[in-house]
Length: 434
Image 1: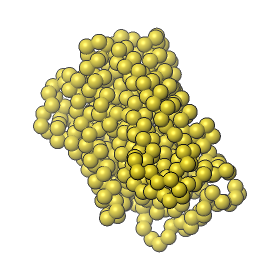
Image 2: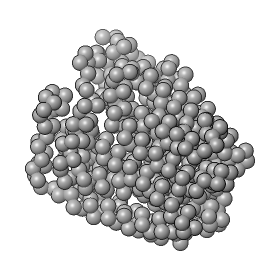
Image 3: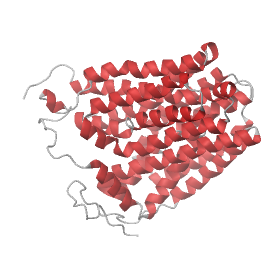
Image 4: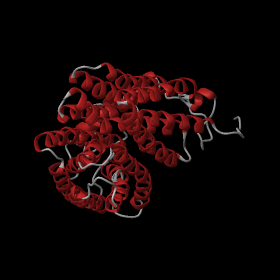
């Protein structure tokens, strides 16, 4: 076996994957700062504009469980390149739109399919093929790529909208996604065996499986089995509320809500970017705690504290960023996706070897919840003239999510895993014991 003294190609693949995730995440910075400009130019209700975000969030969640199957069938390089082109097209074509259905097509369908094809399955596929050692570290760094994308693009997009208009901002986001495509086509390798190398940390070259697992079929089978269990619905219900109170509400409507109270959109965008920064710290800390504290208690605490913060948020808005608002931003950033590590751990505990697949569907519930909140908050703003009711409802729902998490029982082995790769189609992937 050839020994490589220089940098293993796995690190190059991971770096390109990170850049691709950051490029795709650029779009996530645009809806929150474009709601008011689009409303002002076209006269569309905020609920209509938010509906496009809802379609995006929903397709992002529903595409994710099947993304691994796409990468198995067509290859990582092709899927990621096409996904970036879809994101670029969805953002860039908005400059030509004249009707709200075109916004839903561009923002919702094109970008939703593109970003969904580069969701958690992309990270899992890259780390699963290329890394044995440092897999957890690389997974964490790549997962943070989404937060980094928001952090990098959000203040920039806000300044572009203020100084040059929303069309320039949309084109910049499209250009950023397209700029990554050549790097993906040139440097994103499919499998270490293609280079005659073992994965990083492995000692043997493992060729790609001749008979690839039918991941799309397995994903549907996992959903059918999980849906028969009580823990799945408790986890999915809590994570749906998580999506409502993060991507759907705060991620989409924080900037326009702050602008309603006289805060410049660039200032509000900077605050939301700080959420992305502290999100990275909070996620790492939550992973550390998940190894040491009961995940049910962690989820209960995260959701309860989130609910309390949302209930006081309406009183914190002002024309400038007051210290109390900065405290909220830091706290909320730490809590933003802190729910992910304990939720993944609980999926693994309850559903054994199928836990990762089941988490894909729990994550889909997260995005459905986010989609409902994005449109719902827009309706509240259109009907009542402010967002106060949306914040109060989100706070109450977070408390409900805390209760759902604490209802998860810990009593003996809940599942009996069966290796899904060898299970016959008619066999259960697990049996649930109460």
